[in-house]
Image (cartoon, rainbow over all chains, first blue to last red):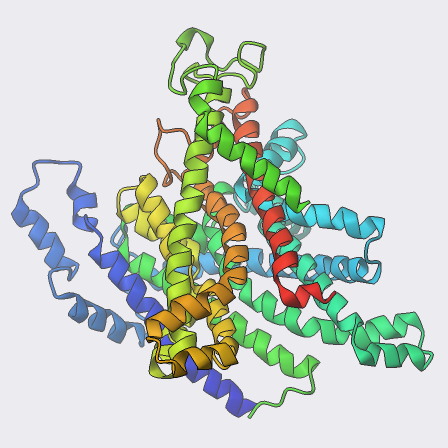
Length: 323
Length: 265
């Protein structure tokens, strides 16, 4: 088991390298650089001054040299400094990471604990009223533009009803709240972003767990379990569910890139102080080191998520033996 | 349900083609005296902040959104099918290289990559289509490769090879038609996804640029007025929802018909 984890961790290295190379090339081959962004608004800046800025940022060296320099700093966890405010990139990201993790972990939990029961009940009572209703919900979930949903919910709950805050993570007077007051304040700020970012995944996973469960329910061992005279409850929860869970866990791992990618838009809409919004702002300002940093961390989170999904396999499927 | 999806798609395509005939106004005709008017008989969906007729803009937006969906997915399908065929048919080091590249692309938060490329290039309808297409192929490659792996061992492929047909001919004439079913399903579902991505990009100001009306940028322009003019945000969003829904219904329907594993049910 340990050997398997180590092997998987080693396998992540070439993947990460590939991702950083693609990001690096895209970032650096694009027309217009940070020097233009800093000075572009002023036509008075001489070419010489721009060249000085370029060499200050190390942008005058050949691309592969720049990449090598960046990589050799990366292995020491040195992501460089932001072009915009000169602060260390790693600090900027670490400040934002907890908010993003909070949002994504809660969304994943919500997806898992709501979608799974929906899928199971739909499969067990195939073609019932519930199943049909949920199919409609699933198709809407696939098709609704999430930012539009966010907008409508913000207007409904934030403006019309005034129940929930619509942006940020804290209220203005947050520091003066008691502990429970603070907790409640964060929860209120979390409701809309978590719901919106989970919505698409919710539809996807409930559909998938329905399919997976239907497939398992047709297997011979389910018929055997029923023929033995086991109660329906036991058949479904002990025999069917465990087997249906296996592909679902993988899917949950695979939905991570979408969740993290979605963060770029949801965090921007809700002014959530997370990594996605930092990445979006960095892209708009051509802050290369921050873009690269956010890209690496996002890819790392995705790879770790997949690893956790694979390891969880071993616990729910005794047939899988890691060598 | 699949028929309903097909019907909606057909109607949308028709609307896109005859847009100039059915739109009550020109999409960019400004009437500054009648700005932000709620839906009425003259303007069934109301007017925007420049007094432009929202219905006409949404009708013309159909053209852009469908175009983006089709071209983007067309690019993704071409790349995805060819790489999948090469990988599945030849195997060996080519397969390894292509599949590792697919692995890399699949653990990329794709939206981040799209955002980055479009922000750096000039955002316009062409870059949006090309970039969505260039990032949309890895899932399909994996699918086509999987199908090819089993088909290439079948008798008719072996026979074609024994007859001395070139590899290209075997791949495109004998293998490709047999993997068309999953490609068709992926394409149909993918068009919906591409329309959603374009609208999300527009929402961040990086999609199709105004004054060309796309549902995404109509919605984005409307969001600033959402508390005084809800119709500007509601209707373009509904148009996106209905279109994507139609493609999803059709795609799922096609899957039920074309996927042999599903037919056993």
